[in-house]
Amino acid sequence: MSEYQQLLRSDIRAMDPYTPILPFEILSRQLNRDPADIIKLDANENPYGPAPKSRQALAELTFTHIYPDPETRLLRAALEDFTGVPADRLLTGAGADELIDLVLRALLSPGDVVLNCPPSFGMYPFSTAVNMGKVVSIPRRPDFRLDIAGIAATIQEHPAAKVLFVCSPNNPDGSLIADADLERLLALPLVVVLDEAYVEFVSGLRVENDYRPASRIHWTQEFDNLVVLRTFSKWAGLAGLRVGYGAFPTWLLPHLWKIKQPYNVNVAAEKAARAALADRPWLQDKLERLIAARHNLQQELATIAYLEPFPSQANFVLCRVTGRDALALKNRLAAEGILVRYFAKPGLENCLRISTGRPEDNDRLLAVLKQLEKSDEA
Ligand SMILES: *Cc1c(COP(=O)(O)O)cnc(C)c1O
Image (tube, rainbow, N blue to C red; front, side, top):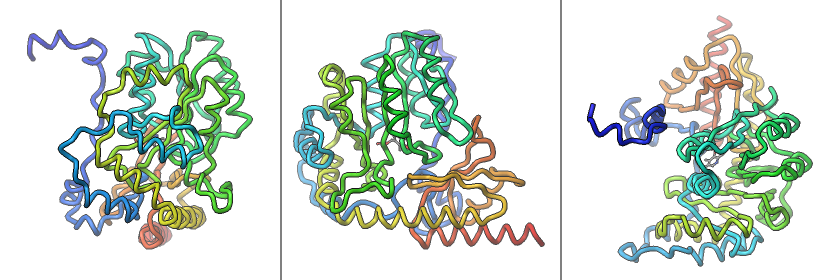
């Protein structure tokens, strides 16, 4: 142990280490399977990969020796067209994850309270801790709906609370926040960060011939305490390039510009994201396949005796496992080259989250699950 260790921030010294995610290549070696033979349903990635125009833009990348535009002007202009929100309200980041951190960096002083509604995305408490904030949790109801009255009561208790994170569709269950609930939250005296990483997968709300999904991103023009975050990682198949964006209140945005890393979005990510926006019909076709596959997956999972799937509007289905051990089931699937996400957190006891694959991926998963059901009966 070095004597210099005392120089560390004491809260960071006391922090638990991050559980590392194994890179795909290493997993493939561990499972003794070719990467092409692994069905990766554990991280909500897009199994169809990036749009052809994104691939082409990456193949033709020339100016990698020149720093990127710190203001991502071209991408933000394309996002204005995509979202309907003026570019001067939009900021891009190295994934939506970076923007979660950036908002907290701008707002939090040590000890400031951030409200979180678990089970939800793990980056909210993580980034709060890194920014020396204090997480106060208002657990969701058993069906994963928000406890709106509980949130309001918690603010009575912590009137100086600064930020509330909500996610719609919520990761890991895929439920939506209703308009009326969001309005009630926006009436509270704090900044509401609405995470819409999966909003493109919401079905049934799309206007014909319009690729704008059921997003509340335009609400940011009406509500001065609303931040909406979105990403290219899930629907546009660019998770590995790290590019996301958000719409922010005008009082907050200039301060985010001041504190962000100047070159936070790299040239490859910026080009590929713009190309994705220019390839919307291709992406839309894949989205529709994934939404249909999710629907089918949900119905099929419900027929399996030991699984209880929750209704989802995202590209994954959360299942409670009954009468058998979810971790053992996850490991069994991994032995077959099928990766799913296992949870052991409060509210997610004995649960698995399964991302939607292509129909052939889902079929392979379902075949293994049904095989296990048969051997149970035997
Ligand atoms: C995947 C995910 C993100 C992160 O997106 P990036 O743009 O890849 O950083 C944000 N929020 C939720 C809920 C997610 O599941």
